[in-house]
Amino acid sequence: MLPAHNCEVVTVNEKNLIPQAHKLTVEEQSKGGKASAESRKRRKNLKQKMQLLLSLPANDADATELELLGISDADDMDNEMVVAKAMFLAAANGDVKAFDRIQDILGKSVAREQLALEQKKFKADHAPQINTNIYHGIPATMIAPPFLPVLFDIQDEGHSEYLFPGGRGSTKSSFVSLAIIDLIETHPDMNALVMRQVANTLRNSVYAQITWAIMQLGLEDAYTFNVSPMQITKKATGQMIFFSGCDDPTKEKGIKPVVGYIGILWLEELDQFGGEKAVRSLEQSAIRGGDLAYIFKSFNPPKSALNWANRYAEQPAASRLTMRSTYHDVPKKWLGKVFLEIAEHLKAVNPTAYENEYEGKANGTGGSVFDNLEIREIADAELAEFDFILNGVDWGWYPDLYAFARCHYDAARHTLYIWDEFTCNKKSNEETAKILQEQHGITAADEITCDSAEQKSVGDYRAYGIAARPAEKGPESRRYSYKWLQSLVKIVIDPVRCPEAAKEFREYEYERDKEGNVISGYPDGNDHMIDAVRYATNRQWKRRGQ
Image (cartoon, rainbow, N blue to C red; front, side):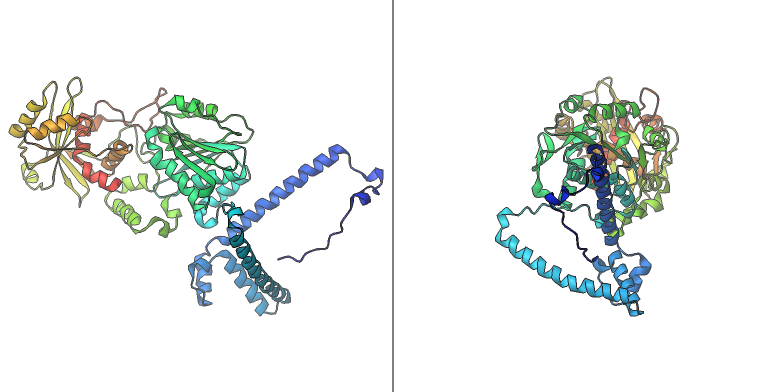
């Protein structure tokens, strides 16, 4: 602590003794006040940054030195301990000032301990009157190291847009959620709008993520949480965090903050939105009424280099800060053993998929969804070895196809074989059931996973002696099942036995916007055999999704 300085107190009467020639004009006083405020703001920001840096974990070399000194608790191995060690060594080498500083700290630490005891007693005596939800900023221990400079940039109002392309486990969403709460707490006139392309994905993703951030910062008692309508409100100020899907434009137009303006916008899974023009329209309609605004955009880079979000991330802009991250930037203990094992397994069996999903690299060309196809005849001898058979049905009448798929999944080699199919139009459930039993060898022991959208058809199959079950779906199931199929080392399709499957998988491409740019949606249309395969493998990809 720096020694206190004596300050001379100037009373109102003494101010009147200042000669008129030395008095400041109103304009000068205003300029001085603004300069003083800016100076205080800089000092405050510097103090916050210094506190964050001191609380960072020590690097490996410094941590080793601390261990040699007998300090083994990981919580104590931060930069503050490194500074304390340096001060101690300086004092030991005869630095009198360093010795006096240590004495000063030790003396005042005792006083702080006594003060803490008195404050604890006061809080116990006046518990109902004490507000325990006092915000002290984001601890550095909650933020992966690469994001610290970004946090400082946000606090310094360095940019208005922050773009975060990153692989799985890169903590980009965690950082954005913490940054939003930091802005809400430090800007009492700001509200936030959090968006995803599809509304029914909000609750289990960004709503849960923002709730996590509030709880991590110890502010859960300072906010109210509602899911219908989906919004979070700060009790003391009335500031609100709104959640909206882009698939219902009427909801976005109805968003009106009670106080202040919407100065924070987060577009999660940016590549799922309908292109750069659609996003620009969202920004223009959402951000209104204030001079200061923050726009956050986060996404896992899609495989195709032609995807609009990948192209957007390559375009420089003075108002934008782009920060790419991967799970390598994150402390391993945050991710857990299972996460790391899954990543390493995919790296070993499918390096291309690993690079895209975990390294965040757009390593695909063109708009094709499946780059892992092997279209070839499956020999009878090879077929005779298949022992893990999966069956799936996508219901259809006309013009949509009814589609049945039979597959074998080799989990050890991360390879899927599609070796039997049946498609038709305008056939009843009884007719298709009979064809599967008589022509494709389906018995009562063969389970078939069917599209759950038609529960009556599932019931019909059961009545006809087929072990049918409805597929397990959810808001993210379609996208995740496609991701799982793309992550396989190979999808082997016999074009003789399965001509429709070979055609659909080979020709299936990402959606495109009006300008022809690839977007990340999976089009619904000529994908009936693909859907049948997704249902057949439902237990495999759903297990990993859970």
